[in-house]
Image (cartoon, rainbow, N blue to C red; front, top):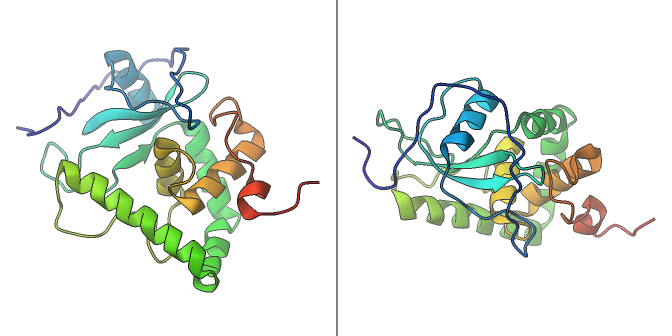
Length: 205
């Protein structure tokens, strides 16, 4: 039996629908309880039944659930430290593309050279951990994505930034901005997401 918030399971895949997302003033969607239709879409995205879904944490501008908030412990008792899980195939493919392009290595190098960036990234880690512990403590300070000292998985960082909006996870924000620049702005990424050049402080051309 699962205690606390209800975790949802659905084995039947279906096609995504075009439900319009509710937007907040921060450029992200509101966290909402998953509908049966959401769970069908997520099952198709993942190619399996979703496990431990507590909420849809981010919905794309074209209406598709793309980040789910998951229970820290799955229904079978397995610890699951990834609080925000990326599901939209467009975004997972983009995260993998960036990883293959060396983005993680460059970000990790900057963490060692930029104390201000490192402090902001650590704050993101602490925020992530605190939010997860509010649901259930796993007795560990492990979060994901390599936080707080390096970058190991952009899927985790992108999910965190999309769930919380810009300004919480600096490197996740950059990765989302790169995704927007790669053709996903206005479809999978909010149209008003900050541009990569602005996040890096580069002069506009």
